[in-house]
Length: 299
Image 1 (cartoon, rainbow, N blue to C red):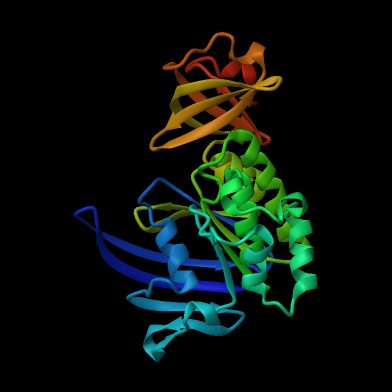
Image 2: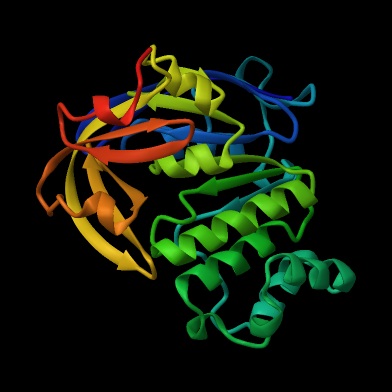
């Protein structure tokens, strides 16, 4: 069990910001930290990792204090047993894929390295340097390297934000598989609502440095609407064909949400259209305002 009860004040972009978060994360959970840019998600992740010190409060993991301001406890990042994956990969450019993972695991753990290479589907890439890899491939290496020291807690800071739709879907599947295979507890920062529903067992919605809502994704979003739906107003920014389906990008606030749709579903839509993003039973749809009733029975 991870228990977080922390506070932090700092300035960002010329304004003062205050983070005040209380949360509990069960062992083996896959938690999503969801919210707009500037809501405090990455700051919270960095404080759990030990890269940033809270002004006050405690962080405990399985009863062991990682940070306790009152007791002057603040474990260094390397003593927290955390694996962390950033947006920018942070791979060693002069090392091969295999060497990047060996560097983190140690040369006495070659069997473990080979298992990670297999789990991350990197077998055909292990002799390549990072410059020869796609963005999705680099992130798979970064995840494997983060797991090299066998952490109990994996922290992901928007690891798929720069990937195309196909690479994103593939990495999501591999992350879930590794999360389950290695019995991890995972906390992931994301802007993508689809990732929350696909990957997370629990979601914490942050707004202005505080937890606005928390719980299972289906419960958190269905609680906002008696019909069991979540709905957001947005604007279509792009419509792209991917194989036999279309990917519709919808701007919702400061977030772009991508939704899969069949050709007949998007035939009446154009870039710039104002739409509603509505979902029920984990199946998101895009509809024009006022036309949602034919799609869903509210009774």
